[in-house]
Amino acid sequence: MKPAPFDYTPAASAAEAVTALAQHGDDAKILAGGQSLVPMLNLRLARPAMLVDINGAAELDYLREREGRVHVGALRRQAAVARWAATRLPLMAEALRHVGHTAIRNRGTVVGSVAHADPASELPALLLCLDGEVVARGPQGERAIAAGALYRAPLTTSLRADELVTEARFTLPRPEAGWGFAEVARRHGDFALVGAAALLWQDGGGSVAGVRLAFFGVGGTPQRGAAAEAALMGRPITGEGIRTAARAAAAALRPEGDLHASARYRSEVAAVLAERVLTDAIGRCRRAA
Amino acid sequence: MTRTVRLTVNGREHTVQVEPRLSLADCLREVLDLTGTHVGCEHGVCGACTVLLDGEPVRSCLMLAVQAGGHAITTVEGITPDEGLAPLQQAFQDKHGLQCGYCTPGILLTTHAFLEEHPDPTREEIREMLAGNLCRCTGYHFIVEAVAAAARAAARTPPA
Image (cartoon, rainbow over all chains, first blue to last red):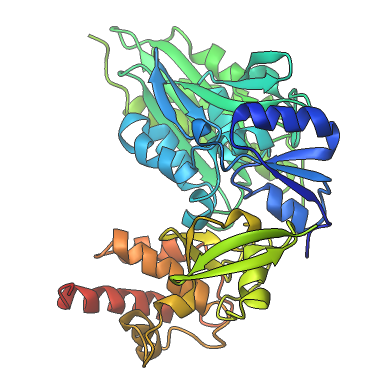
């Protein structure tokens, strides 16, 4: 349970980290909060030759609201983001409450979790639900990667080995939008067996003007509930309509079974949670004037 | 290749030579001889190794010793008075909030920080806080009682 030997480079800025990544390529890993990487080192599931530690890169410790989005820097801890989200983005505050425990959130970063791409974790699904993107910086400069183009497979993203995620951007919901979040886990703070997040807003007549549904724990990547979104969009809300939409979204998922839950159980729970988070979202909607 | 790190632990400065892969937990125990910090799962799940980093609970098995320079670290030795027990520790003894004691240092430090932010916690809040620390002996009931008792005792005693 001790890591294999590695070398260590503290980076005082994003530029220094990118330079170190360019030097070491595939052999290097970025160390931010370390709450996912260090367990993998200790279990020797990961054996990087070089760790590039960005904890000294104070310029990456920020959270800014810009043009309807929140930009979270790569060093902003989950606990700090949760304190901001309590009043500005309750959906994220609720999701973060389910990310590990206080001691984990005090070190773990939002960007680290988004980039680690564990399919059972909350924040990648939230990036999907909130039309988010990440900013990746490499030797050739910066590029933005939309959430839908980021996740490829478990723990696998479209990031290149020489790129550092400097920032994650989440769209702030319009004021009248309601939200829902639910997950089923064996124990509070454990990885979810299944989870879902929803955002929904209505027009003046009460029809659905916008809806986002995202799942986690039901496949190799976080999944958008596109079938439910299409079924609800532009229509008046009924209990039956929500149930049918939730079932349609869950039917499109292809979860795998494992020791903790069978594939059939995950599909069934996904349908139940989708209905629950959509219903909660509707309950929290404010009617547009 | 080793590196030199200056650590501040329980208010005392130490200069240590460590390999980058040495965890803060192992550094505290093996290098500084502060064996109150316990090591359980070594991957962040059990909470036995919890210490305070600048006053906030963190897993010392998920932090490298080389990362701890410039931070104030508090271990269970640091919250224990020279004579006797701190009120929080006394509450654990009074309420039988431990059996084998392996998880206790981590729980004490997690609770120490928790009570500063939640001086009057509900049982539900106490349980959610404790979910990050595994105890396989007690079934948690007496730990919850101990935390509640410590909060009540602190409320009766105005801060000096």
